Amino acid sequence: MNIVMLTNTYSPHVGGVARSVEAFTLEYRHRGHRVMVVAPEFDNAPIDEIDVVRIPAIQNFNGSDFSVVLPVSGLLTETLDRFRPDIVHAHHPYLLGMTALRIARYRQLPLVFTHHTLYEQYTHYVPGDSPALRRFVIELATRYANLCDQVFAPSDSVAALLRERGVEAPVAVVPTGVDVERFAHGDGRRFREQMRIPAGAFVVGHLGRLAPEKNLEFLAEAVVRFLADNENAHFLVVGKGPSEAQMRRVVEDHGLQERLHIVGVLAHPQLADALAAMDVFAFASRSETQGMVLTEAMSAGVPVVALDAPGAREVVRDGLNGRLLPEQAVDSFAQALHWVNSLPAPQRQALVDKARHTAQEFSMPSTAGKALACYESLLETVYVDRSEQFEQWESVLRLIKAEWDIAREMAGAAGNALSGGEPGSGRSG
Image 1 (spheres, rainbow, N blue to C red):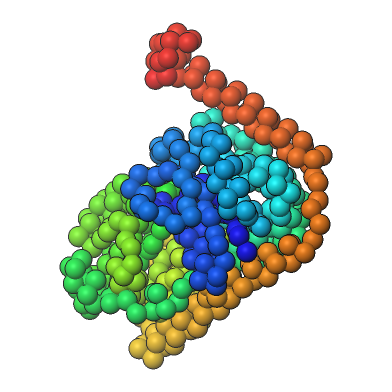
Image 2 (cartoon, rainbow, N blue to C red):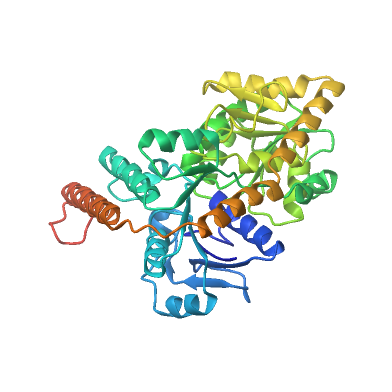
């Protein structure tokens, strides 16, 4: 098959969607399929990429580490004519997701959409964030899903939520698989030596984009509570993002900065080494749709302490491969970390073994097989024209734009009033 993937985030961007697209692309190509990825331009993007089309983009949109793609040129049409796709797969309902919709409609091809993200959790990156905007964002994603021939949900929790929200298109649960072998043989001892973490320390780890929607202030508070009661414990964080300063501040306020190690973004094999250096993986995000970083940690034999939320609840089995906490409370999270730390060696090893076993259930060959079976089934169906739903979806887009414009104008007026500027002066405080 010739598969075209359209995504707003891709290498070298750090994040779950980018890594998911890359992982599936590699597995599909390994199985003999051809995959073209259409993605925004990013600074420091790899050179000489194979079958990757980069679209010009505005970087670091509104203080985030996301990009906003600019209008797609006719060069993409020519490239697609040569590529001759069989399947169009969108990984977002907006920006390049809109391009995916138009490609599928124009070429009368099956359209697949992976609902990676709870988009309402990310509206704080948009000027004029408001409850109405969040409702519109949910409506946009739901209507987009209903314009597709197949929707992939990364977890059972998300599949149930989509149906509750009114998604009528077929929904299949297809989590992003993990390359178990890639993470199973890291050198944790070597990584600790490089980071000057004592060999005998108990290391609480975290991996991911350091952003507000990841609930990192709470996570830092909980880990600090644990560190304060355990002099031998250290906190290892892999990743970067706007919340790094906030995490550092929480740790510094308690005078524990000597035991915090934020090492930035890592590539293999260092990433596998970093996971192997951890004794427990701490995770507090409630905005996830799947537990990809959790299965990667478990591939390295690292048990997980997480809040009960979509993504985590499909992976973490309380008391077996970690702890799944029903409520967000600093004390209970710190106690769960202490529970792992205090286990006798045989019970700790059982926890490690169960974590590795769980990771095998989410292996990439298994999940890619599910996705490809859906693709093949779609190729046997007749193209369905959804012109009426398309018009309704575009009306939602217009409502979102109106809400955004109104809120932005109100914010600008308030800023001018506070700063003493005149309307239209360009001063916003």
